[in-house]
Image (cartoon, rainbow, N blue to C red; front, side, top):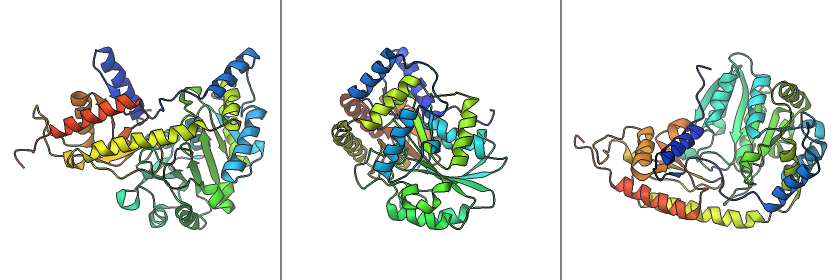
Length: 398
């Protein structure tokens, strides 16, 4: 535990709450959570489940109704065929990934993690006894790992490759050809497995989502496809994730889960059936709305006179903005900005805007800005960021 960090995203949210209690007006662009309400038909299904007495234990791996809905979802949306025994329902997608590491990693096994990465991957690997091997993927490759990088990093100790597409924190989206090229490398190393973290699947503005198991069906027995309802259905608090994979792995995850959390919430499972099998027309409103918010953030970044810069993300609801232009400059009180951590602290203090430093995601100097907040708050936050950036001064010694 001494080697594990608290989640940086949770820590930023805690800081924002603390400052609000102190009377500060803080706009939190650090938390990856849609501000939209969970769609009505999903909420109604939860109420109905309560009224029907669906408040008891379920099977550890999930109800038969939900596992059936997940199988149908994988078939219709991803061209993946799973039997219910190949499915597990978890308390969030995070648990599925954590349990996969716990169930499979021996001491010093290696897991290749492209950076920027979701903040929890390296710590979950370390807590499971493994070693994260970080592949730095900068803007020149669109923040995505290349086949040459992957090939160079695989060793006899490599057990997993983690792929997160669309990406948190960059919004990068792997195309079919890119995944096919990675699959060509993986075929040479039968011991290496893949976690495909697809949690942002439906939040795509440009391009098309595709998952590794559908691109490379011959590798399906080595792929754990992870998804959930937190992001695309605005159900973060419901805590339901799910995964489809080979029977040997799902059996191990089920055993581990039976000795830890047991089943996910019975009420949330009933609501998730409604989410997966009900209408998704709400996305036709949400996606254009989120795209406008993305463009609001990009316009603000362009107005910082080079202090911040960013590529246009194709998906998810984050902008990963370089703050290299701020490094070496001084704040109005004379403090030098020496890192992206300093920049995040400056924006919190000066602008009242919480962001997450790129150091938390394994690639600096960047800031992750989550634009899944109320439009008025986002506009206010962007204006405050621009003003704060313009207040930075050249280092006199420079």
